[in-house]
Image (tube, rainbow, N blue to C red; front, top):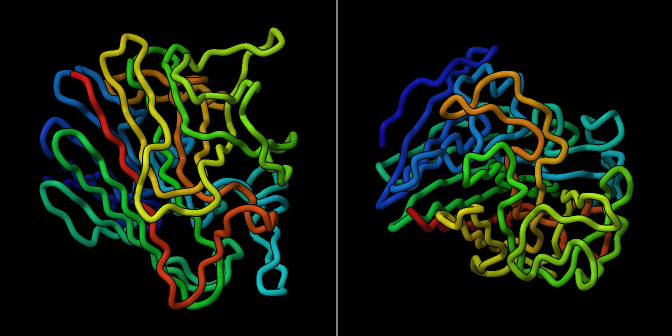
Length: 338
């Protein structure tokens, strides 16, 4: 593994960049947000993810490009939930209404520690203090990225706590396999029979409904660009893969470039998968990888996680972590083509 300085945080913390690889796959990681900054596949002359070139650009402009979202990914309605009979109030970093991706200084906005590295893997760690963004308990998190031949990126998370709390981590990479201006001509498949509908604030209603006969039915490979009732379908929705976490990662989704020359299969242990098509992306005012410019629908995300707002819906898989229990998530990105 090669490691270089990537920049310095406003508080003085140094951010490093590590390049890992094996076989046909090379992945660049930075310790800011535990970000996957770049992914390259042999035989493909372009980056396969959205990334930026300077730490300052990530701090000012990144909508979680490649970051690890946490302590609790996705939305919590009103930033409020009840845990063991006590009401917990989190920060309200989404329009002052809801809590999103761990708050103002969630894991995707912080410096992680480089704990270990080799040519094929890198391990990053972060500590989250009791009361940070309103969460109870001191939490320790470890994220290990590793590359296996011929072209698989593994993401392994572990977390522990000294008091009951929420932990729900999600890798938030934006994929664009073609280098086109948008990903609407990419083809997608998600192995889910149900989804969780949301209100106008993108908060789940609590229902779990079949995807059959809806615009969210992606059980067969099809283009992301779809219309319903004459209007374009926009995706920022949780798919209910299963009722609980699986003991080992299993295939949950696949994305293919319009030309069919490259694809990525996503396999994860998580019960939910948030699919986001980049419909709320704003034009990024700085160049990205290889000088590319990113705008609306510039990339799409597959975020393995517990269901959004899970602590407020007893019928959803629970994201509560307790002392003596280790949170574990395993997700694989399996690339092909080139």
